[in-house]
Length: 118
Image (cartoon, one colour):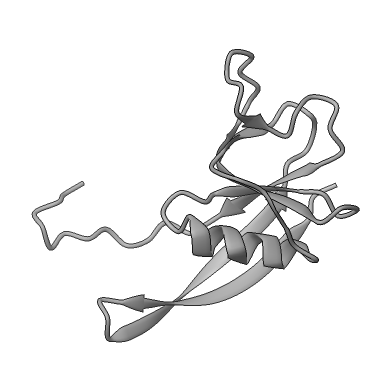
């Protein structure tokens, strides 16, 4: 089952203007998808709160959350990937009832102001 949530967040752009970015949360299907845990867990009453707190704490790196709707336990994660047995910080653990939700973000426009090019 795929769960899609649309979240609209406003971010300040260069300290003056705000640009609206759209975030998509999708539940990973199957037990093979995991993420690297970024830090300590916390309790969130809703998945959306879990996601927003992850962005607040780890704005540059939060790309996934592992959430248990029964306990409210929320764990921040980096990118979602397949299982890597030698990585001990991958979440959710094998056999866990926690669900991995990864963020699908539209690609921001390329910033060419510092001589970056494609």
